[in-house]
Image (cartoon, rainbow, N blue to C red; front, side, top):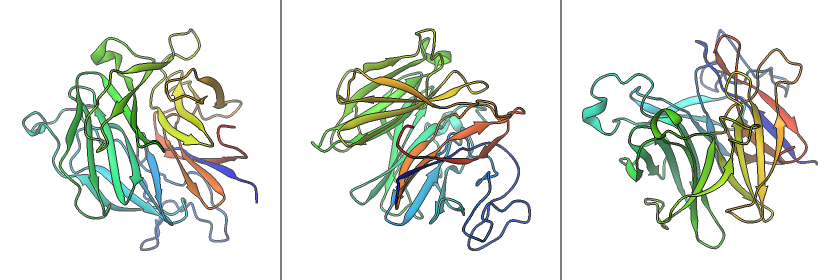
Length: 304
């Protein structure tokens, strides 16, 4: 059986999803005959990311200043999703978030499963990069650890390499740092709780072609390091995949998903996982009215 890549994209609406416990009266993606229809998630889950743990899949998404934050969704088939938890009951620093801070807080989290533990990293553009973890995604999560303090660091994703080293990729918000459209990688300690090296820029979107590159997700497969990252902005952007044999590059790049002739604009942010013979990529697509819904499509190979 050929390997597949399933692209799922995330956007905003006020509808619910189908689950084993409750069937939505508004929208059901599962057609009940082994097929499904898009969107698979017709709800507000901005900047979704997904990871696999055995036969289970878990998703989280941006929650900004909303508490409880970091919603945790569960699925066994990537079509039927249920909301099972919130990973963030209190947002740090508590004194700052005791009052509404519209648009601030949790930006574009990454969820990963490593050696029996689930990790979530996110960037707070005003305070830095945070991490929480748990052994049970439906239970309590640890208190946030400030992995790296500073302004403008957003969209972090960790990678545990085969040699025991741990890396972190992230982007920058120009509104806080004065720079954007670049991706950097630094090294973490073995616990994933602290940055232990200076950042190395691995991609510069200020090349006249890939402005506003952000939301990077870092993976390794068959000896290659892959970076999935949207560029071009939410309204008219596209999906880049970068590839290198070396964690710090140089990276070759390829546009793998764009608006084309469709009425829906390009993909923006997401994550990659595995499901049997398929590769799963979660990608949010923004509609003409700024709504966000979850769509899916398939490709034969990773990054194509």
